[in-house]
Length: 234
Image 1 (cartoon, rainbow, N blue to C red):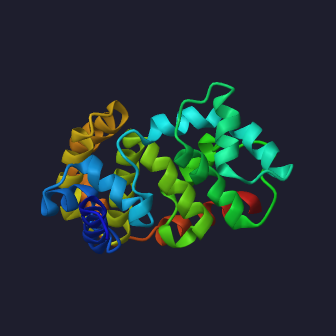
Image 2: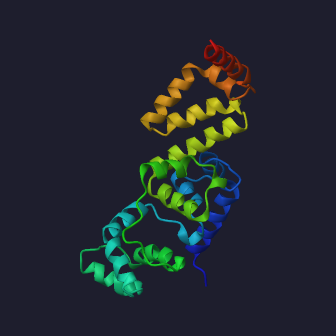
Image 3: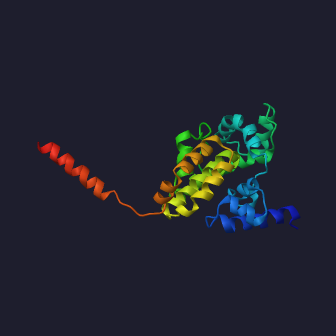
């Protein structure tokens, strides 16, 4: 019989994704469902209810990470028993759970390929691309990497949410939402976003117009081309 905690986790996961998958911002989902924003983020970035991490996900990851090179080497040697591998790294000082070890080996098992020679580290450039890329541009592997990245870092998740909402304002010409965006950016408590929000506030009317009105640089480009042609003919 399914436990009450599992039922609650499954129902909450479904409720969050019913909104998140439609593009509803984290903050709005939190207000609608009466949940803390950090809780909503954990559920939003979990592919299934079983993938929802507790509040200590980053700590668990940090515990197993130093042992991944050993785990991957042993995997490639033919030892694919998570229980045995957990015992081996505990003898080396690992203090995490067997479940965490099993989670990290699931991706290797599912790929059907040898484990990487060393853990796949995200570079700053790669992380930036994952956060700013259009969701339709991400394949399943990159979507999973993004979910794992954001679930381990609430601050980075706040940055990602601001980036996504600003992108929607630009593509949908919703300059009317600029004031709300500035407020959300300031409430993240992150200094770079706060500085950006203050800068936008100083030029609010111009920025709002730029996010609302249609315009084209065709005339400007035409003038530049004519000047260039004139200079080259002289």
